[in-house]
Image (cartoon, rainbow, N blue to C red):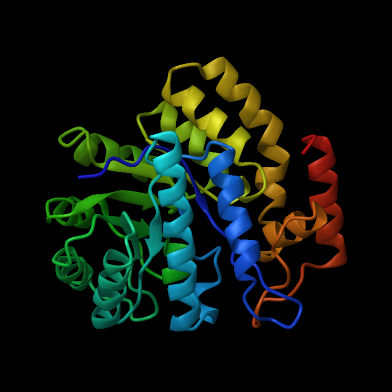
Length: 301
């Protein structure tokens, strides 16, 4: 079973001015991430605007990510995993998306809790039970703010005992729940990865036994986020704290007017491939633009 650790970038999907996917821009962003020392890439998540992509677009994005990661891995001898968002509130579709990720060479599937339906704890368990049979490592994604349901630690403990479950992306925002996951699940299975879904909580989570972060900010600054996370994992908390507080204003600014609208504006401002968002997301407000630009200056990014 793969062990996820360090900083993994939840990648944006760059768009052209006409709203089409900028595949070459995406490729260049992947190469940038790999060259800057990121520990993993995660296309087709929330930050990738996946609800607004069609399946042909998704498949092309997966192929580019896997192709560039394979080139990098062969060149450097370092394995940088590709984690593909594969969630749905329809279990049949989630299984199909995981099968697609596996077929196209992804290393991990990121599967969000089924949203909108608000299933019971038993329904959540059975959802992951079906997905676990696909045979690709699964990272559970708990983000009640978007799904409308929180995966209770008792339910996650059952899910963690299924085959092919490699960990959880914890975006509940509740550090107490994260510590409970570490104390009740990871303590029994050290290979179960507990990753923060919030840049601002990655250092606190690592300090209590977590494994890293699935980061939005690292779209812009992969090297610094990776250095911060790995310094903490190595026990160098002085270095990790210095980087955390340097980046803290941007951790906040990157979500000032929603995600991925805010990080896309920052990337466009720094002349990176990002482009506009697809409706219903729109460009950030003028006041948010100032917050983002000020944060970039303060953080010297």
